[in-house]
Length: 386
Ligand SMILES: Cc1cc2nc3c(=O)[nH]c(=O)nc-3n(C[C@H](O)[C@H](O)[C@H](O)COP(=O)(O)OP(=O)(O)OC[C@H]3O[C@@H](n4cnc5c(N)ncnc54)[C@H](O)[C@@H]3O)c2cc1C
Image (cartoon, rainbow, N blue to C red; front, side):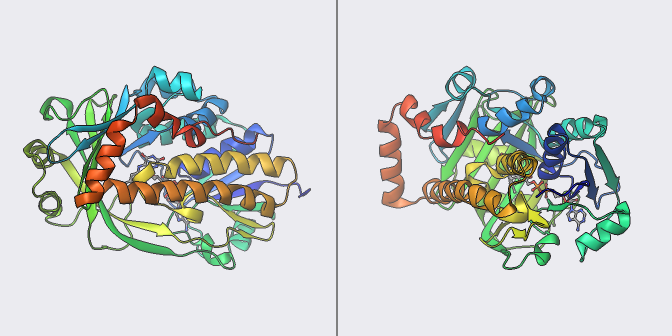
């Protein structure tokens, strides 16, 4: 693609903002459009694995991120009924040494703000807020910019409108699982929640992940189980009546400390979990979907934002080398396919019951932490094309 002119990005979430910075780093001007009138601080926690933080470091954001995140000493898998530790994958300094990049946990609003500040400070990036793109994205953006964009990037999330403009694109489908998201003050938390670790509590048909948010001294808690869809949810959607009671009911029979944590947690929100099925990501060399718009996935491998960051960075690399979008898509689909498969495996393993659960615990308990960490080399050690 040897066209000139700005790249237009629809959506200023993690995918869109990372893409804007990545293009600017390659000397390509970008216009980024978002429906929200202000990119206010919303959302919950986020785990950023080394494959994502390596890229954020290349975008020169590491020193700011280090001020707001914490680096857990390990990621532990714990039985939700007995609180017995089933497995522990070392993190902290170990992650930096093994994967040459840190594993951080933070409030997603902090990441969003750091990305936005960097985008706004970059003379090659222009941000346009309060503009919702519905149909005919290229025409709508041409009208807005007064010139045809060389490429439109659809970074407009799981409910993407840009997807309608891509032939054979996937569809958002409900997974049958819902996520309840809470925060809980460190001082109120039961001892099972460790402020130095990421802990995934596992049980039949459900799991719950807790990790620290250093800046606010809260735990971020995500509890996932079967549930009904309440349709499209935005960050600002109020939780339906009875949200906390439904969550507690889904975790009936779990250890009393877990139930206590759910009872004390603040501001519950309910997220029906949608995935985008496999399908087309590009319309010729005119439109490309990235992040959740292309491949929203279940949070079982905690990789959705990480994949959005990888997509954004590698897209800028392919475009700056005048490679066709089809080459980018083929390259990224192979990676996303592997990550999705890992998420599906985790879903099966985390929510296992009966003999499968016993087998899982036995296999995990026999593996040394080093061996468990080695299973993540392909994921966390990924070197993006630059
Ligand atoms: C419970 C849960 C826990 C998770 N935990 C993790 C984790 O620990 N680690 C991890 O890596 N990932 C995690 N994820 C996944 C991660 O949150 C998402 O994959 C990621 O935020 C997707 O970013 P995005 O930029 O693609 O989309 P979004 O964040 O949805 O951004 C889309 C943007 O587009 C804008 N927009 C939408 N439509 C339009 C339109 N028509 N016109 C203009 N603008 C529009 C929106 O306003 C928004 O700003 C989790 C997800 C869930 C549900």
